[in-house]
Image 1 (cartoon, rainbow, N blue to C red):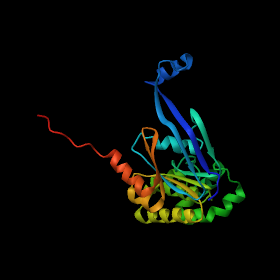
Image 2: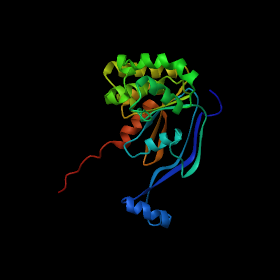
Image 3: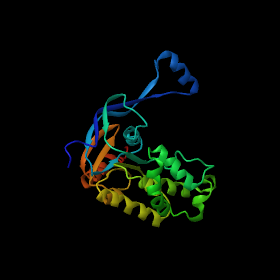
Image 4: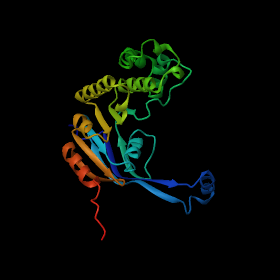
Length: 250
């Protein structure tokens, strides 16, 4: 294992302002957000992830998982603290983001490739792999506006999974398509892990985490409450989030 982490968070905090409506948001421009309620999405988060690790991110809704992933992918930035990401990131978050509905699926492969920082030669090299993986048949050369949501998701997954990233970020994306395609996706992820790609996988499924991840980071209320083996992480998660027993009032 390389001594230098591929991802590192150092005491990272992220705050959001909660506006009542668009009028309050506009007013805040002139008051420097004075009196506006704040929400702390991440609070002093620190961890290191090394090349080749497969790490699960656990936590209930609102725990800070999506905020963490957005900062790794460069969509959002910390209020305080430092984040280091070394390598090309492919994010299976909003799989259909960046598609042009008027362009064909094949044309969108190139468009999405450009958005992800690839040139014509690089996209051309992986085009057939994407086509084979998405398995859209004659629809590939039809406008994306004619696709079902499932077809668009398949194409988005196929593009992101085949751009040869250093880091693959997945947020419950394996709900894509039918059972056969889900299996295909999981097998591809395992193949990438075997090649040494770093994988971050957000899921509420203990079975999926066991299958894909050797390490798990558990977030609760914006803080890391566990960072260790996946099996132990699932155990801690179940203990921390289980419903409290009801008591009968006399």
